[in-house]
Length: 278
Image (cartoon, rainbow, N blue to C red; front, side, top):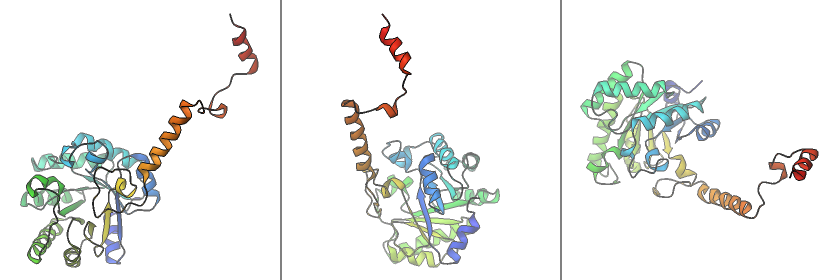
């Protein structure tokens, strides 16, 4: 049984930290789930770390569906949240509903939307009214990178912090079960989290929020094109992978792979028959 919205809310109510990581494929999702994580986010960050696009805005709804399905097949216990990609919900409420339903049918338990415009609030109310849980996303919102003008810290003074809080309250009132807060000073994040009933999940938002989310490729040291200040690397999978690949290449080039245990062997009489063939 996967973790429910109520289970996530209970963690905040009990003062327990909420753990969130991204995953983009079956095996990674399976291993992350076996570690008893609370939420697995199929983030649009896969645009960069999996598909090699320049920005998260480049990934399509069709591509996201493939990864949501793969991740969902590997998860038994965690809540699976699907990132709604750029232009999958901005066109119309009908389009947003159709795409959110595609993710739920693909195995997700909830969807994540960026922003807090009146139009978006209306979509959130509608989705939650038909049984689709919604996670919000404020602070630095990657889909707005062209408007914001780059990866810039948000909520850098008291008034801007209050503005984000007011946005978060609107998301809460619209029905969001949680909100991601990205690249916000830790004091601002603490203030915002303390004023909300729903959990605040931080990414580059300090420790005094209700939980944390990071990109799995960042903590594993697999993706090196972008190294966010707020991401902690727990191992260097890139070097581990390259060492293994180079060892394999060396064994092949020196005829050390495969050995007899890794090969299928004919019976001696069949081998002799082949050797006598003219």
